[in-house]
Image (cartoon, rainbow, N blue to C red; front, top):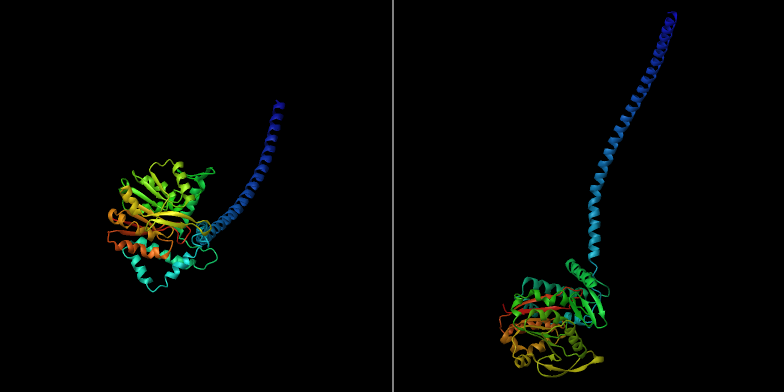
Length: 382
């Protein structure tokens, strides 16, 4: 029994000791909790201050962004605009425009009858044709006498030329020394003219191209047959090609062969005012060529002509003299180059108007990096 009491006393002492230890532990715990609470309070205060500061920084950044954004947009526009404007007029850019033709157009403006000539040319044209003429004359002034490149073209023109460059770069390749391909077209030399393969000689500006399907087409100045690649698809009849220069004529025949064209008739003849012989070509390589008239040819072949395209290096007025009967009787649609000399630009339209055939006129220029080249008079009877 005494042992039992002793054990109980011992347990009691242990309990007291545990109470004492627990009491100390609780005090330590309370102290730790108090320290934690103080630290948390400091942290909360610090975090709150940092949150406020962060909010202020964000507000400041938003304000700065609002100020910077318009400037960034300006920089972006400038970069894009600079990239787009990558095509310049570089004198002397083109062999034709090196020959003093620009000077000739400016000299024509000094004539006492220039104002009347200009008014006659503008008369009856649609708004787009008038804009084309004004732009044409303005650019002649701008490029005259310049020795460095000039940013001459509109943004739309720049973009179109870049598109053409990209297409030609991706789709033109050499099959052999005498066969080059661009898309569906093949030529014996790598000379894919933009005005033909992209602008199609302005054919899209003709009122009703379907009326050509049952009529013959005249290609005056067929060159190497590049125009033929576009024209032969317009008719179920024939395209009559006239090319007097021997080297060009050989390439014309090669083009027909390469593209399997079966409705082309080739004539190694120049078209003019009367039949005869003429020396053509550069001074170092002239050749005598046969000259015929379109009227004689049409009468001999007994054909109905729906379209005449003529680009014959400044002989267009002589051509009209030998084609007047055909034009007056059949009233075909006309595509006539008027950029080789100023007299063609100012006189050809009034000549046709003087025949009183009911023609309407448009003036169109293919998009290229040149001032004069490919200015075309489009005439049709609606």
